[in-house]
Length: 213
Image (tube, rainbow, N blue to C red; front, top):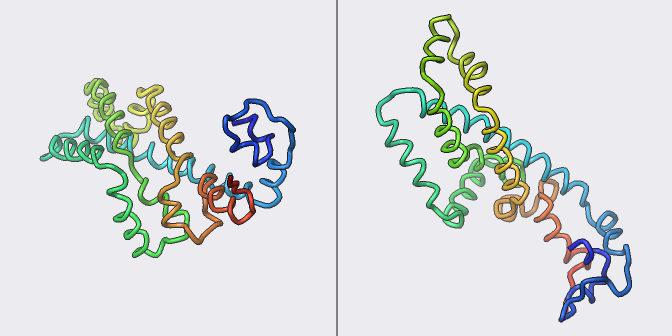
């Protein structure tokens, strides 16, 4: 991929493909920064990835803590129902998610991508499973000492989770950097909110970078 950036468009689609460019050129790299607003697309991707990752880490940790350490009616049923949503393929959810952001008036805004990603089922599962291993006696001792529930969560539970939030955050970040399908539908006219992949896809044809045989 790196070497192909220095090839001519006709050479990229040559069959059989070549490893090294016959006539190395910076033309494609130059056109990316001059004819396409790539800086904007990159900034959008970075903003969306960091924002959604931070939100998902917060919701995953909080919901995981509640499911692991609080006793309430229907807890296990709710957890099983939550896990079952992981079996739903994302194309099935695409149209309902689009209709939701459409009726909320969020089309062509960052909320198109942020709203459907406010929580991660896998992140909740990961945090809940680890928090089960934290002794309940530590929480009880903190309550006896007068600690409020938010203090217990922030000052005791989260520090004891160690690298788990970081691992979950890495998975969320990797997934959000590749976000494309909702941007394709919900921000199709709002180029100012496009992430890199969709921005590049929309711009190649407009800038004449699409190559054909």
